[in-house]
Image 1: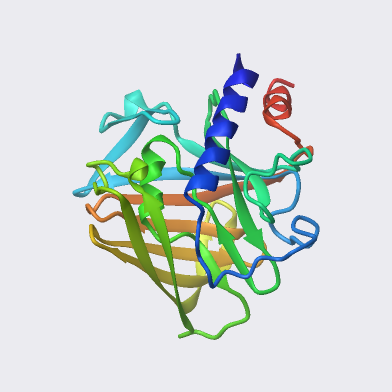
Image 2: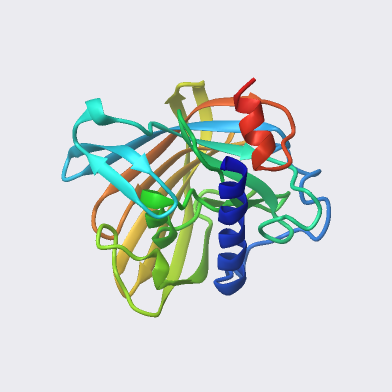
Length: 267
């Protein structure tokens, strides 16, 4: 049943990406060695993020987070989903979700029932990541994606854009009809020593704004040459804040599909 659910969800993601392809025209995507030239997001690597959600200075917690549905509460005793795991996999031939992008699975832990596949880009010019985008985290489609232009000085700015369908909309983070054009502004604003679960990490800070007809959303991203994006601080159009903090990065087996993922969990 789990494997069948995985196949159905993968098909949904494939269809979604074909119908609503991501733009980000300024992004450099390599034509070959898509996985082999990665230094951070290497095959078998798993990145574990804590989740913090706040609205009007109150903390909220996820009771559940499914592909389409989610439930939030301000009662911490009801907490069910406390982490997001990003796992880099090696997909089987012709099963890559996003062409010429490294395949990753997002899972909502500690008791995942499904995996959600998408892609990331890592090369000598830039690093760019599709955020988690199931259930409550569909909201992150309305925000700037984690993105850094490498080897650029503080003060460096760039712009990009993307159009998304209204299947991403929700009253919690913004509603619209038809397609929504998001115009992005990115800037490298500094270098800081970030105190984290992994210790003190030297990070480059990127500030980004997404402007659209529903308003403005923001992302403050912290990027490490060793761990990639270690802190992602989002502000939705409606003022809800979502903070993802990297707590652990581990090396595991090279997985090929959802079956491998769940078998590795059961060992």
